[in-house]
Structure formats: C-alpha cells, structure tokens
Image 1 (tube, each protein chain N blue to C red):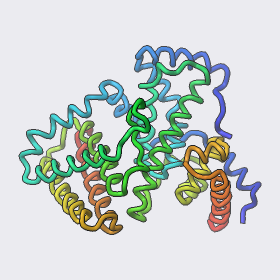
Image 2 (cartoon, each protein chain N blue to C red):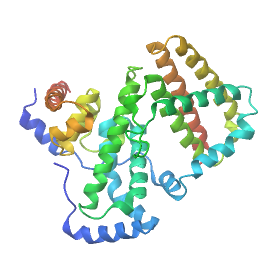
Image 3 (cartoon, rainbow over the protein chains, first blue to last red):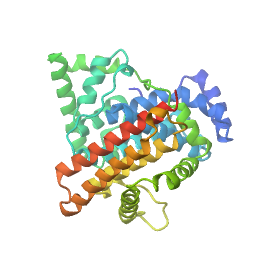
Length: 178
Length: 172
C-alpha cells in the first residue's frame, strides 16, 4: 500500500513548512509542493490516463491546498490531508472526463517517459477501462476500501469489487501478451 | 497468464511518485500569487483585440450560451452551501464546452508574449470559434448527436493545441 505516513524524521520539517505556508510563505509552500507533487501527480495520471489532464489536476490540487491551508488543524498528518484533496480532485476530473468520453471514443494522450521503471505495468493501467482503472488505482495503489471507493465514485460496493477483479484479470492477460 | 502473486509483486514494485514531464510550479505560482489575475488578463486581452475580428460576435454568443448553460445547471445542493461544480449534472455538450473554455481561459491567462510567427493567432482562434459556433448551432437541432459532439471536441482540441503553441512561443 502506498497510503502511508511520512517517516518520523521528516514530520518536524513538514510541520514547519505547513505552519509557514499557512502564514502565506510561498517559498515554504513551494517546498511542500516539491515534496508532494510526485505522489499527487501519480494519482492524477493513473486515474485520468492523460498527461495534460493530470498536470491540470495536479495544479488544481495545490491551488486548493493553498486556499484551504488555514483549515488544516493537524488532526491527521498533512500528507493524509493533502492526498485526500488530491484523490477527490482527481475523481472530480475523472467524472467530468467520463461525460466527455460519451462523445468520442478517442484514445487519451497517454503519458510517456515520466512513467518510470515499471513502465509496462503503468502503461497497461492507463489502458484499463475508465471505471475499472479508477477502482484499481484507488484500491490497489491508494489504499482505499471498496466501501469508500463506492462512495467516491457513486457506484455500488459490489460494482467496485467486480471492477477491481476485472482490472486484475485484464492486467494479467495483457502482461502475458507482452 | 501471470499468476495473482506475480501481479501483486509487480503492483508492489510501482513507484509511489511520478514526475510530470514539465515543471508545473511556474504556472501554479502564478495562480497562487493572484488568482484573479487570470480573469483580469483574459478581459484585458479580449475587448480591443477580439472585438476587432470578424467572428467576435460568434465568440461572444458562444461564451454567453456557455455561461447560461452552466448557470442553468450549476446549482448548490442546499441554499446555505457554496456553489459546487457537479459535472454529472451537465449534458455532454455543456461538459465539453465548459471544460475547454475553462482550459482556454487558463491558457490565455498564462500568455506573456507571442512569437511574431503567431502574429495572427487571434484571427486563427476566431476561425475555430466560428466553426465551434456552427457545430453548436447544429447541436441545437440534433441534441446529443454523437458525431457532432465528436466534431465539437475535435475543434476545441485543435484550438487548444494551437493556443498551447502560441503560449509556449512566448515562453522561449
């Protein structure tokens, strides 16, 4: 699971950065951005399967974080709070994208070099059907439970489970082909 | 076929982080510095230049129809809650228009200078806008027609790609 807390030694520095950012310090906020943008972009890209949309969504996440920083009270870790905003923002764009796809069957602009070392599996995840991909990313990579996913995506819990198994089945088939 | 165990191992090997292909901070910082600047800048760019091109009226009519459609469908869940954009409540045409117009506004806001090679960019954009208006007109008579919706998206896409080149030309 990738939904984990930051190591203990980074928590203090993170607290300082958050505090300074809450006071409007953009230099501190840039550091927060640099530390977290990779994970935020990852969830955006994997959910949206489109580089341009993922970049837009990633920016949108940090704009929201900046605007809502004063509401962050430290009840959870900053990382957890931020990634909750990231997931929800990406899901909002995903919903909008779902509507747009009703109009066209065009393939999205799939990401390239930024996919890193596990490029093959990353590419296959981006090829998954819209809903199956969202469920797979949220369950297998972001650590959400099927009940939470059902609420986030507006589907039945059973559908979330079946879409997850469908995604795994497709990935196993495609990995075998390649 | 790969076993479940092998797939799990591959999934576990995926990186938690992915790096965007370009640095997103400069645009993001601009949005943080002055969130209203984007709107102001678009307004500054438009009146003198857009209204001078032959298809400005089509553009204005199109923008007005978008605003009307969004206003029509964009309602708060309760009177006390702030407005929240809910794309599930929009039809496909409005969703396409809303999405691309929003992106276009952001592109225009990020425009600093334009390379002379794109000197006629406003006219180019206006021509796309005229084509978009014609497709929207056709959609009024054939709502939700898949081919028209596809055309609409393609036109917006082409316009967006062109505008992106114009914006980037000024950043070099």
